[in-house]
Amino acid sequence: MDVLYFAWVRERIGLPKERIETRAATIADLVAELAARDDRYAMAFSDLTAIRVAADQVLTDFNASLTDVREVAFFPPMTGG
Image (cartoon, rainbow, N blue to C red):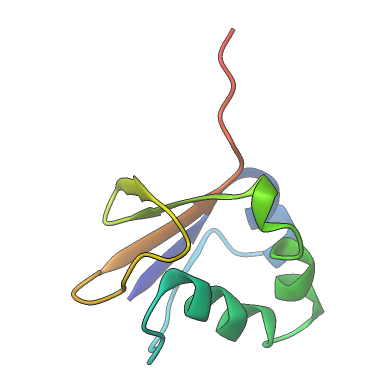
């Protein structure tokens, strides 16, 4: 699965994207797995209210299933103006 990081999420983790293998059933499980990797990930995912997520380029929530998902993207909320 490809995992993409945007804006300050990318800055905290230090990568724009990575390919990972996971057995996570939901996006929340994936976040827990990533946050356990090291402090960079833990800091990036410390406040999930400040992060939005998309699965295969469709906005979703952290309880969404990862079954057949090929790409997950994490990014801060968008603002317009």
